[in-house]
Length: 183
Image (cartoon, rainbow, N blue to C red; front, side, top):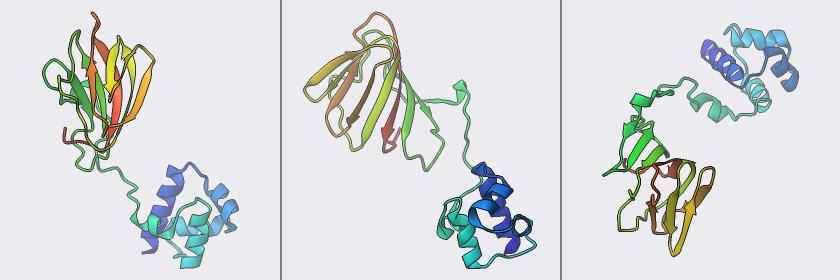
């Protein structure tokens, strides 16, 4: 158990970018004591562990349940982004292979005259995005606006909405939507 606590504490401290000396100073524990705990040579009492974690800050419960090792893919090359678009519209979804994905983060490409369809879309959640290239016409409820490079949007997706590229150049934008829909 002491090895486990020590290894977790060292990993957490390193992850937060705190030196051993700095953490010892913050929590009022000697540097040598903290070093022995991290090496698994000493098992801290619950109160000592709480004192150390309060200086990070983190609860004891979170400390024991936090996943310190990423088991999911973190980085994606361009060819690993899944295209989940329909018709001419390209939606490159980041993290499509993550089963517990909490959001949909996409690079969207709308060729000239492409759109999300004649029917307005509505679903629970929120969506935000920013135009990288070209222009996109977005209709949200009764409001329509043509956005250009650098302009952004953020709205509740339960309001019916539609995207359309009325221009002669492709439009690229990045967007993020919650919750992650079944893309």
